[in-house]
Image 1 (spheres, rainbow, N blue to C red):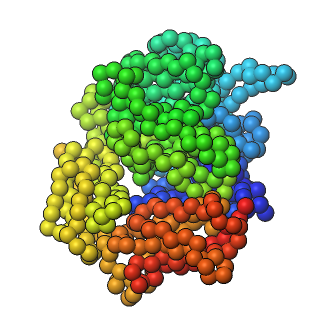
Image 2: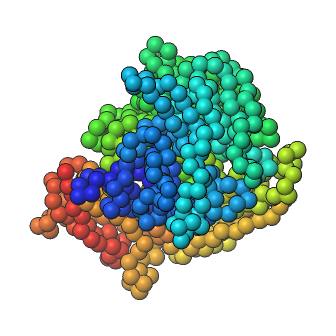
Image 3: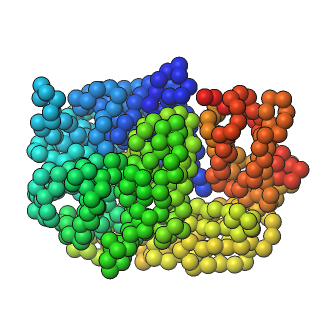
Length: 548
């Protein structure tokens, strides 16, 4: 969830980004929500992906888009939302179905508005309460009160595959508190002295998807610079082992951190640059590659780089430290260097978003099989999942990206054309137009799972019988651009044609399966009509409104 609502003003509103079966997510604008998200953002969904609750670090709301029972004023911040990056985090309570623990941060100020205390608190949400809308049953319980750093709440599964570790660093000293969420509740286990003291700064904390690494990025000031602390993390004990501290004299002003799905590459959004580090390299600092430099665009304010989040589609999304209508995207974060494909403003949002980026851990991390802590009899039974992209010049060539989880060890692809592959993320060229059932089977010593999808390549005649293709066009009204998402249909030579209100053609642009962006910068405000054609077959049509 992104954005901030202001009923009656179409420039403002809350947006829900939905990662479903298609290769590209969709974004739904919810104009009736009068809610402000700032740096602290949590949205929780169930196993089916249905929204349960969300918070801005100040108020918890339910699926009726109203304040959850007893969910008001969980912190002392004002109603526009907490300004603490990663200032909230939600975790399912182990072995207690429907119970969620929400961690949140509290600042206490003196009369001169100087911060005098930091507290980490928690509340408990019971989703069976209030007729299934949820109820806050435990509220504002202090778990830590100390000279703590601001925000950077992040968690990782214990090696037993059930419990959760949460780390919290003290400011000015080289010490981390270790908290554990188990069926017995949340407790402070102990603290660990490690590394050199550091004053907290703007930035982000992140665990690698496999739970082996923990990274903190802190940009402190122009005089002190920015720091990247890289640790090895022991999921059995919660201990950290220092790998490397990287220091830059420059101040990033805004920035964040995220890992690639394969846990190899670390991305640091460094205000006007995005860096990639290879954690498998002998010298991590020397492995740095600049994969993006801010291009100077405004939307309507400068669109530099801020908070990052690895999403369920295997892409990394990056917010902007200003109120804008877009997010940045890293399309292939598992690839080295520029092949990762950073697209600035790759997602056009229906309304303003200022700084916010949802904060969530890897919920799909299982036990560390074979470790001394693998004692609960839980198994990593893999789950198959994938996305795909159509080649821009050869419509029959498709790149598949594996999104499977729970420790797959072997991959088997059946492309439905009598060819197979054992690659993790293969590139395949289909022999001709047609409908192909593409199945991915992943397996390990505990079991296997198969996921199949039917891909239609250039078979436009079928749409004459079944109607329109699976195409989504948003936002509408739009401003600088519009997103066109084509579902499980891979067109041979499809084009979107945009006409003004007089029927004069303004733009013609090819479209492929997945996410397409149609830029409207040079067009006047007003009404437009679009048609999406594959040969002489009309796939979709509709009206667009461009507003200021």
